[in-house]
Length: 500
Image 1 (tube, rainbow, N blue to C red):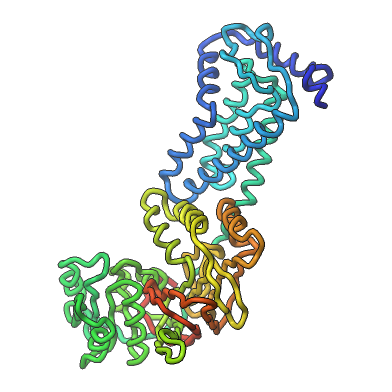
Image 2: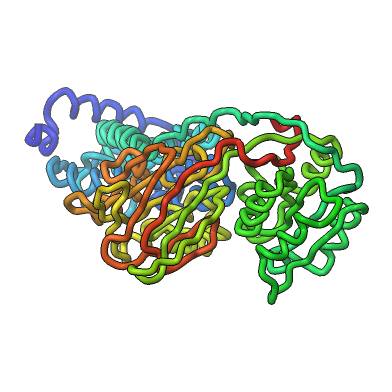
C-alpha cells in the first residue's frame, strides 16, 4: 500500500489521473479565484475557527455544536498530520496535471495523502451537524467546497480528499461519543395542595434580605405595590437573618410567609415556615434563586398569580446535622437544605464558572472551570457512610437533579424522596489525568472516577483535616462530621397550577 501510494501505479493512481484530467478540462473563470481563496481560508483551520466564533455567540445547542465541531476538527487534524502523512508518503500533483492559472502557489511540501483540509472540513461539518442539524446543513456546502478546492487547485489527488474526508467523518463520530447529547429532562411534576389565597397579599408577611444581590431601594416599594396588604420586614446588614425571619413568621394575623432573597435566605425561611405550619411564597431575588426557578416562580409575576389563587405544592426538605469545632466538645448545628450541599472543590469550581459565564456561556464556562480547578488543586480525604475516599468533589442535591452529569442544573420533581449523591473520587490510579481527560472529552458522567447514587441518609466525616461544607451556597468551615436526612413533603410552597 505504501509503495503504491508513493509511486502512483495501480487503479487508484489511474482513477486519480482520470479525474484530474476531467477537472483540468473545466473552462476557466471567476470560480478559479473563488476556489483558490476558499482553499486558502481553510489553512490551519482559520475558516472553522471563524465559523465557531460566530456560532458560539448563540447560546444553547448552537454554541455546543461549535465546540463539538472544533473538537472533531482537532482530532482529525492531529490524526491526519501526525499519523497518516508520516505513514503514507505520496507525491502531490504536478503542474502539468492542471492549467497553470489554477495551480496552488506555493504548493505544500508535506505528503499528499491524505488531505488535511478535507479531514478538518468534514470533521467540523459533521461534528456541528450531529449537535445542531441546522448549523451542520449550513456548514456542509462550505466544507464540500473546501474539499473540492484541494483538487481544483492541484493541492491533492481526488483519493487524498476521499481518504481525508473519511478520517474527518471518523473523528466526528469519536468526538460525538466523547460529548454525548444529553437526554431530554423528564416533565415537571408537582404534588398539588390547596392553601390560603392571598388577595392583594392579605395575611402575607414577607421577609426581604436587603443584602440580596439584586436588592435596590425600589424593591420594597415594588413588592408593596403588588401586595398592598402584606407586611414587609426588611433585614439589614446588622440583623440576624434567622431572628428577623422568625419575627415575620410569628407576626399576628400571618397566614403565609413570603421571602425575598438568595438561596440561603430562602432556606432559613423554609425552616421557619415548616416550624409554624405556614405555606411559603418564594419571590425571586438575591444572588441565586434555584428554588424559585424549580418551584415555578422564577419571577414575581408567577408568584403573585399563585398567591392570588392559593395554588401550592409539596416539597421535601433536607436536614443537615453538622458537628464542628473541637473534637472532644463539638458544636451541634442543624440546617435546612432546600437545594444542594457540597464538600471539596465544588465551591471553587462554581466561583470560577460564574466568573467565566458572561463571556463563555454556562456549559462552556463549566468545562473550562472544571479543567482549571482540577489542574491546580488537590483532593481531600473523607469517610462517606463508613468508607474512606479521596475526593475531588462530593455533591448532594435535595432531589434528583438533571442532567445526570457533573453539571446538575434543574429539578423537575421536588418531592421524589431522594438525596442525589455525586462523588468524583481520586482513589483510582492516574486520578488527576483521568479527571482532566473526562472533563476535556465530556465523559465525566460515564468515567470510573464518577459515582452517581441516590440515598435517604448520608453521613460524611473528615478524614484528616476539618472540611468546608457549603449548604445552599452558604459556606461553613471547620466541619468534622455532617449527616444528611430528609423530611418528606414537609414544605408547602406557592406554585402556579399551569406550571404542573
